[in-house]
Length: 436
Image (tube, rainbow, N blue to C red; front, side):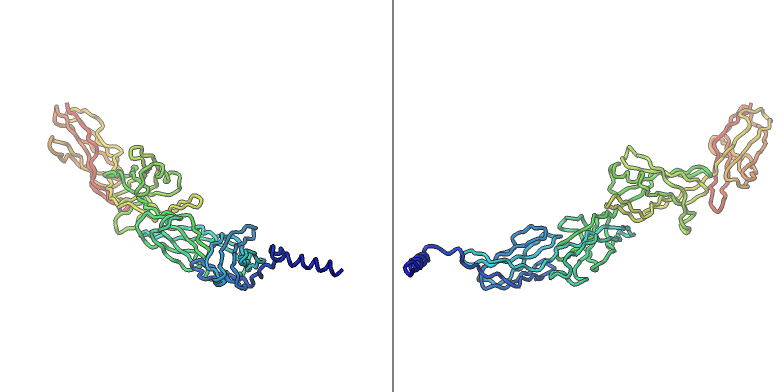
């Protein structure tokens, strides 16, 4: 019995120099794995732990089951890692193992779970172009659920967000201008600047940046293209214009004005000291010569006035893309008004010497004035007779004279005022009388 025991013991001793036992102990697992911010503004996470002096491997583990390498640490270095870039909008924790000189890994120790949530994406809810080229934006944020409230990387309320209004296009690295806003703001103003320009809202927290779709502050213009030299009282007064962005060259772009619901109106006023009033609206038409969309208005001439086209401040929105403009107008143009002759002339084109010829006048506005019947001597118009008009109507009989002559005649209505607006002196069309 003793001999057999001794044999077994010798065999066991002899085996010591042949191989490492499979049951060799792994290093002790790390403890006290913690995550905190080294620099929240820069997005630098600090991971720390306690061990017995071994090297370490760190992985980031996401709650959806995926993992990724986080860092490695030599035994000679401190038990701290600053950096690492987690996937955003996930829940994660850091796994740390110790590794001995033989490459044996310890059991893992883990940090508390923490979220990597970005702020909710901003959506522009209102955009208003202001005079001078400034732009007011309002926005809301998409709600984000915090599934790990009060985790080690949550920041104090009010310190977690930076808000910017930026001029330029989203995704571009170098915006033209940046205007910081208070944390938590939901409205702000881009200061006045040259039009046109795109602007957007950007939100940033410790995990990264989100931004809205852009809003285009337009360089909208409205132009006078065809203005009559005068109007005739009570008759349509047609003015043509053009509207679109200053850089607009294609009909496809400018067709925003057709069917867009953006109003273009004609305004009028008696003088520069009086307020502008509505005087007509536009009808769009395609200008195939200039490849722009123009418009014309057909108001009614009621007296000499200043006219302009007016486009109020407007907002055109397609889904989340915006195009906005402040109110724009043309320069003012004064258009005088002439009287309008509904009837004027003799009751015959030929007459015998001494024959009574009847002159009839019916003119608008229906003023009570004295019209001047004139004839042309080949060089100048001569006074022939006065025709009293009552409410714009009057007749006069005169005897034909000048046998063998054919003369040109006309009626001139003097200047007058109707409803406080001036009507200029107006000559009628020319009519002839031949005397036999």
